[in-house]
Figure 1 (cartoon, helix red, strand yellow):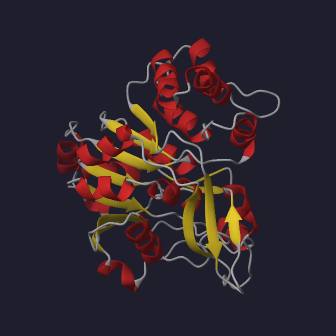
Figure 2 (spheres, rainbow, N blue to C red):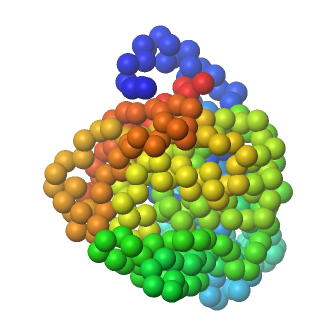
Figure 3 (cartoon, helix red, strand yellow):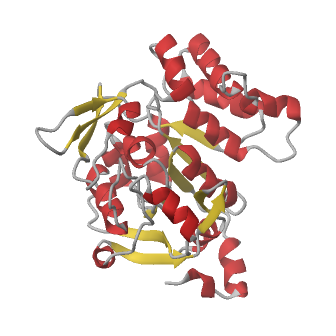
Amino acid sequence: MDTMCVEDSTLKKKLARVDERIVEIGGGTGLVRVNGELKKYRPYTTLLQTSFDRGGHSGDLCDMMSDLIGVGDCRRGIESFMADDLPQERRALLDFVFPDGTKSGNYNLAAITGRTKDPLRAIRTLSEIVDVKNSVVPISSKPSWLSAITTGGNGSKLRGEHLFDTLSSSDGSKKIRMMYLDPTVSINEEAAQALVNADKIIFCPGSWWGSIIANTLVDGFGKAINQSKAKIGLVTNLISNGRETPNYKASDFVLDILKYSKLKKTKLDAVFCNTGVIRKKIREKYAKENSFPVEIDDKLSKLVHQIFTGKYVEINKNHARHNDQVAIDIATWC
């Protein structure tokens, strides 16, 4: 279904349905790109964010505070809802960058959590200060390590998302075989209720294992999503990742969602795939990392009810990013 042919009058009617409750699942840049546009049309949007990010500055904070969840993705989620005209002194509470590269929001979320012992309360407090009324919810309030068993040889165990960068094989033979959390943690009740009460649930693009699949690994995720009457959709990544998802086609992403979410459905309701052309210079840059544009393969039609395609790509600082069109298509999907 080429979404670019939708007539303007029909589009306006569909965009006018503002009462939909949408839950976006993910973390990092991919979710922020989708939410940045979707929030304009769907004010009742909740972000379920991964809470197991132990890379970079979030990881440093977790090392200092053993009971702290990864706060970086939750900070990005709050930022994505901030109004453009928010006074700079309040905006600085989230997006000021210190000389070591850490954003102020990471420190502030860690500080409030350290005092209250409640990451949800920390997120709500900071959200109120910057006039964000939407819910940003960590998938769990307990820290854990994203862990995996790999293929190739006898397989190896990885504990910590940062180690996924060590996955490497020229033919893509060494890859993730199984994902799990160590230790096991449960889904936040607020996150579970958001899933149950949603009209649409969207798995956003992003770091596949660390930002997307990680959310499905908490105890209770499968129960909550299966209790929901929501339509479930996936925005596939634009580019496969040579280490995490080597040679992935669109159907491979869908199969992972069906597997790890423990969905009783045998098909997703919709998938959103890019058919826009990525210029040669950018493709060559990604190819050096064994990463390639994600293709729509023959298996996909057997795994989803609706396939939406469009020119969803734009280039930002030599990186392929989703543009605003995919959010419009999510909003108008019915």
